Length: 273
Image (cartoon, rainbow, N blue to C red; front, top):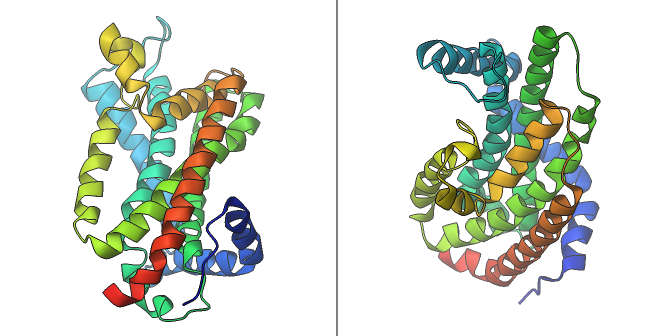
């Protein structure tokens, strides 16, 4: 029986060794999503523009919501604050929601002993990062248009995503594996993602919660990153580097454990499928 290395070195080695394959499959994944449509890849730009417009209207015009950052807060400012949070959540949700079906949707690869199944979550992540990049560009253009300026701290955005990426990968490897043996995982994951959206500081600030619930929200793995993203994109603040370092170390640990679990269990995929 083929042995699949499950150590941290193997995780990074596989990522580097199959980088060309990951890139080609990611491009095919993105192109395939819009194949056959009249607008093609333009949908990837049109969708976030429409969502930003909807957020602006619903939360600022209908609900007249305020974030509370200043007395002169505008409707447009609230929309950018909300959209910044959604950019983080959508990356997480797109990867995690697809993870349980990654192996089930690629059964033909399971039969091929030489195919590196562990790269499938990377392919899913790269496709999600493409859509996040489009949404980020829309937000930056919108922010620059209404403020006539742009914070240089937006350049730090990729550094904020790095620890989140490894956390997403760790969870994705676990869900991809468990999804093979327990088909109900996909439905459960969808429900949990919906809950996470409303218990993350996307539509409201942490300060809006009673003190006793604020500590609970901080346990949400998205809370810290969402707050940091708003700091660098909207308010031009430097991120909490010590907090990012701690988050990065924890994310690496989750990634290593998820990769190890996937490698240990993948030997049973062919028997189940």
